[in-house]
Length: 236
Image 1 (cartoon, rainbow, N blue to C red):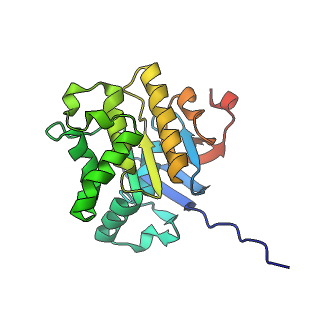
Image 2: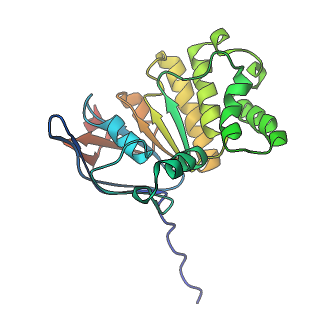
């Protein structure tokens, strides 16, 4: 009899994270653990000041926990120096923010090409890959326009294309619909979910919006420094 297939290792594992604000001595994360599988879309909700952005920064290696471990694709981020963390982020992590952070002096295509430039992808591949990412996000026809000429929803689509163009393992999205109206926000999240599922990228969405969180596969709440599984009714 053939052996049973082994369960795939998690994409991301957080193990007993602790983090305190030094000035106040207040614990923002306390014995926090989490597992995220490849292709899983997770939403994290919580009140302002609960530590959601701190947690996202620790996952990205932009901040360090006081204790505990962050393992991305089996790599312990605590064992990497700042240069190695930068290289890991560029290659394996994508980011989407509330404020879009597209560069106004670059065209849409040039904005999306940036991650490929930083990774030294062969020059002949950069433009075709960026154009393909824009096509998949429904804005291929806007490649040679500038962000200032576009709506907020279109600019956030640029941010999605840029975040996924290098095919990261993990996407971190911090309130990506916070500057959009309800219709544009829903369209952006629908697109984001489609692109994540198509590419098998795992994602963590930070949001205050229950309607946004419901687009995810799973919702958890950060409260008292810990995460708890959260039904949509409880999240409200």
